[in-house]
Amino acid sequence: MGELRLSVIGVGPGSPELVTPQAVAALREAQIVVGWEMDLLPIQRWLDGKKTFLQNVKNYRRVIRRVAALARQSRRSVAVPRVGDPCISSGLKGLLEIFHDFKISIIPGISSIQMAAALAKVNLDESALFSFHDYGDQTLRSLHLIEAFRQGRHLVVLASPDLTPQRMAQFLIEKGIPSQTRAVVCSRLTLPQERILKGPLSQVVRRRFHWLTVSVVVNPAVLTEEEDRQTWLRWRRLPS
Image (cartoon, rainbow, N blue to C red):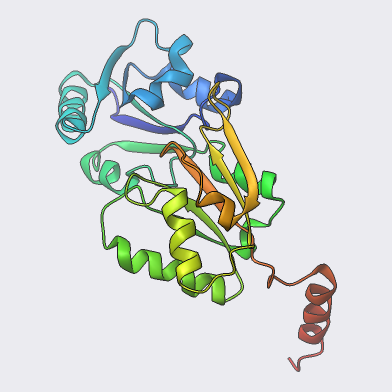
């Protein structure tokens, strides 16, 4: 009997051109593929001859458990593509639980977060990442936006129907973040419907965006290169 194998594969932000060779190799090896429509769209050319299952908001838990049971019974390998990177807002914890007895490989992918940070010209290690895709206390999470900004971090925010970019911008302004604070809002990156807005929060408030959006709020309090250098020099002078 063959070894039970699962590959959780990042397939990039949407364009087939950004699916990595490693992701393609893992897809070609899989016999069963399961994902949401937006997960499957970038990889259509590699799905021929594979048993494919489509998830949606009503059936996604039931379908993934059905696939796990089928794979156990037939000893077939499974690929779960995830748009962007599978370690970012992809339901990874649930997959690891359901496929606990499989040999699991996670294949990184290009994320819309990376692309948005590049467009905003900010370092991710100077940023705080927030996702509103999953469940939880959205009000508390929104307050964490303010806390992170006041601590001198850029904000990188994955939107949802519960927290659209315009609602996020309005919330930040109401909590005292200056309305002229620069933001970069990226909707449907790399897709034909791609839309990018670069402007102050006051402009974001007046626009509507698709929920498949990542926003970067650029914090002017982040250290400059010279301030970084001085911090590094002070650290070097600390006694060992």
